[in-house]
Each structure stands twice: as structure tokens, then as C-alpha cells.
Image (cartoon, rainbow over all chains, first blue to last red; front, side, top):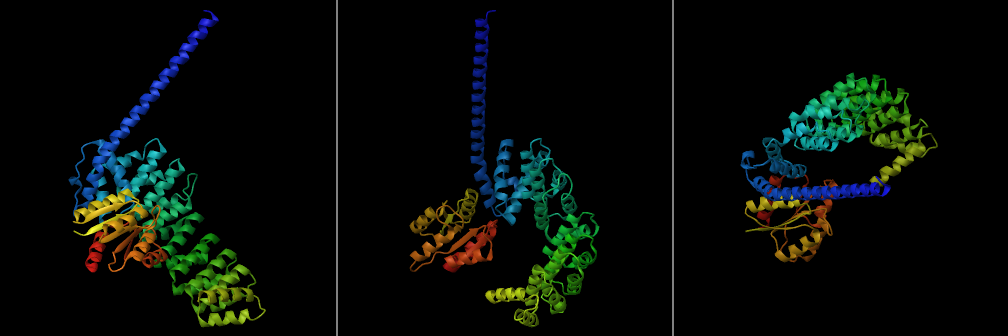
Length: 350
Length: 123
């Protein structure tokens, strides 16, 4: 074979390959367009049917008769878009409809899909529909190798509102595949006060500083008054300053009067500056004049950030606190600049 | 038949309200932005307006303010629908001239009750 004929054959082969590729691409595009047209046709039928169904006074899932898998797919797309926009009975109607049409069970199976987008979308739908049966799948996704899937699963678990998911969410805070603390915290907050008993257990028993800190912080944010003793114990005896500080803030948020003495004790005896700051802030939230002596000492500490928080807290303690601030502000004693700053702020806000 | 104008750039919400209100016996007109919503309000003289807050061209409060400036004798009731749920947002909505306020996500059933109550009060 000559060089020219070899070149000719190669040229033919390349041309053939290019033509085949062009034809394949065109066929793929045509198929995709046909699929999209078909989906739009189906959606044009399903959408008004779904909206008419929701407009009924007491719609039953069986009333919406869809005859194909493609229609169910369209229903899933439309209903999951609506779920996030509704609350109340209409939302529950949608949740029941998705369950009755098998959409949620299919989403449960899709949590095992190889593609992360498919797994994340399934988790999102299961959370939006508050499908309690999917808790095991969502808990499994908390250790997914894809970070975005783990975060979606944490958010979805929160939306289930099931306190049984709290231990798994707390466990997701640590390890090689940890979920960001902010995402877990939002999920736990979404569960609400029902999460409190499991958070108390976490505060008492977890070996992780991150977990204990978040448990303490959330118990305060969720207004869990029954956790006050547990929080006072953590403020007094937890080995980690992060946890003691979080416990102090939580006690401030809870506003429990019997926390004044342990908070004042911590303000005086605590070695860690961050915890002293947190206790001064908490005493300000409580606004209880019994903490007067401890706060007055903190105001004179010579440590600007602590003195400023103590000054704010004294302002919240009523006339005696304000009188001390005015005396200090007028003097050259330590704490005078902080007292003046607080008085200026209080004056501006009145 | 009372006439209701729904102005929202979210097609899902617009269409759902259209179906709900029509089923409840109202004549429903929909628009998808503040500018066309304001024009429609001036043209069709609705008995009540459901108005989204965040919309292209004109926001909900801007639409209400313009409507209130136009009004002489009759005052069309306006319900603001919005994802803005802060206390200051609610105050701003009422200050602009809205009669009621619902935050998103919302309950269509609760909204229907508010519509009925406002229409009864207006009549």
C-alpha cells in the first residue's frame, strides 16, 4: 500500500467518524427535544388537574387520576415546587397526594442513586414533604461521600420534625464527613422544642466539645426551661470553656432567676475570658440586681471587653445599676470609659 | 360576582390562587408584575387585590401607594403576600396602605377566609 492510499483511507475513516458523530449528536438532540415536548404536553394536562384538585374543599388523593409514570414524574416536579410555598392543610393535602401516588417511596429509593444530584433532589423532596418514613434513608445520607448531599440530608431531617433524628444529626457534626455546624444547627432548630430531651442527653454524655457546645446553645435558643439544671451543671463543671460559655449564654436566654448565683460565681471565678464575657452578657439578659457585686467587679476589671459587657448588664439591673454607672463614669476609676459608652448607648436608645 | 385581581410573579402561586378563587365563585384576573398589576387595577376596578411584595418593575408597596394616591371615594382592599416577615416589613406594608398581610409560605385556606372577611367589611 502506498503512502497516498494509506492517507486516503485514513481521511475516509476520519470523515466517516465525523459524519457518524454528527448524526449521533443530531439524533440525541432530536430525542431530547421530543422528550421535552412530551413532558411539556403531559405537564399541560397535569398542572391544571393538580390545581383544580387543590381548589376542592376536601380533596382526596384518589380524586386525582393520573395514568402514566410520566404523569407521576410531572406531578412530582409540580408538587415539590408548590410544597415549599404552602403551609397548613393544603400542604398536608399535597404531602398525602405524593405519598398516595408512590412519589415519596420512589424518592426513598432514589437516595441510593449513583449520581449526587439525584440523591440530593430525593432528600430535598422527602424533607419538603416531611415524609417521616424516610428518616433511615436521610440519616444514611448524612455520611454520603458528597458534601452537598450530606447538607441536604441534614436540612431534610430537620424538616421531618422528628426528635428521633437528633442523635444522628449530632453525630454528623464530627468525623471525616462532618456536616457544617450551621447546617446541623438549623436542622435541629427546625425540629423545635421536641429536640430538647435528646439535646440534654447530648450535653450530658457526648465526648465531643462541638456537640456539647451546640447542645447547650440550642437548649437556650429553644427555650428549654427544663434544661436549666443541666446547663448550670455544665457552666460549673464542664471541662471545655466552649461548653461553659455556651451554657452561660443559654442560661441568659432562658432567663431563669436561679441561674443568677452560678452565673455570678462564674463571672468572678472563671479563668477563661470568653466564659466571663458570656456570663456578663447572660447576667445582662437576666437583669437581676442580685448580680450587682459581681458585675461591679467586672466593670472595674480593667479588661475592656468584659467591662463593657458588665456595664451593659448593670444598665439592665435597674436604678441601682444606672447609679453605679453614673458614679463610675464621672470618676477616673477603671471602668469609667466603658460606663460612659454604655450610658451614651442607653441614652441614645431612649 | 366580586372581582379579584391577583398580582404575583410566581406562576405557581398565581395559578393556584386563580383556581381557588374561581372555585369559590370569584371573577379572577391575574398579572405577573407590579406595573401591569397597577394598570390592571386602574382598568378593571377590582373589589379586592392580592399583591405580592417582591416583583419586577414595581414592588407591592409601591403599587398600593400609587393606588391610594388615585383613590377618591372607594378604597379597594389590598392583601399583601410576601416572604418578608419581619416586624418592620409588616409595618411598612401597612404604612403603604395595605389592609392585610400574609407571609409566605402561606395557607390558601386562611387567605380565603381573609378575602371573605375583607370583602364583607368593604361591602
